[in-house]
Image (cartoon, rainbow, N blue to C red; front, side):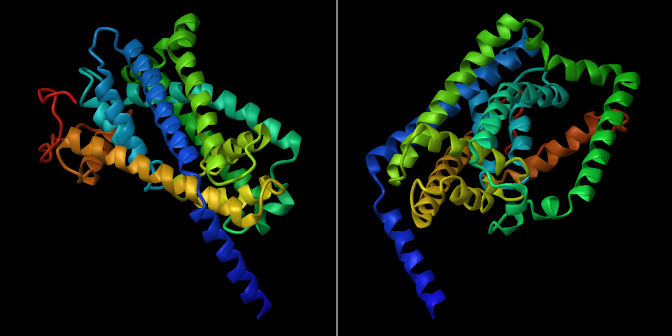
Length: 340
């Protein structure tokens, strides 16, 4: 009976926290989230421009492709939206290829990796993250197998890494054209000054907008919005999507945040914040993403286009056998179609 009463009390506190949201702070949080996306797209556009210096790379098309990917990633696990992003970008940038566009996405994450690593080390030093013995006991923790079987996980990780290294090595020796296409996506890294000016500057600004968005989300749900709590939320958000078993790391993010923000607010308030932030961001991303898909494809049936993209990506890999081209699906963008 006590357990039932405790659950009911916690549920009541949770919904009260949701109902007491500060709408002004929530509006600012959403606006900074949108600004973050706008800034990130500019960085990716400059990476593609460097890869294809003679091609026209309109911002509207890159923004539409990027947002379509963000929208699909919000509801599909394992970053399935990245295929949508690549498909739309390829059909909007004349002469582009999947290997080059894929490597451009790698370049787009380099600065994020550096920032996330520093934030993670800071969080570990501050004791904001649960230790390894605590992880299996955290509710809804997605990495339970990895934590409970570290040797097997490490072995599988080494096998996957070794296979990837062998594949890259084989491709570099036997498939010159494929290697050149992949290297083309890294073209902007050849000039560090240009890379910092055209990519890092925009991504640094997007991180500022992301921090501001997180700060106002905390304020909106009445969680103490200090530098420490804001950065802790950013760290947890990054960790929960490293292994994207669920869309946006749902479940894992809430579980770790209760640990990381202990003392900043009650567990019900922290859960209300985490759930509310993820719900709002998901709604915004899905609305923008599927709006972009509708404008660029003329339909919301994106799965058929994803299958076509996956087929084209497989054909572009080293050693792939050429196949008869399949008819383009209804509503598919063509190079002669109006640009978004």
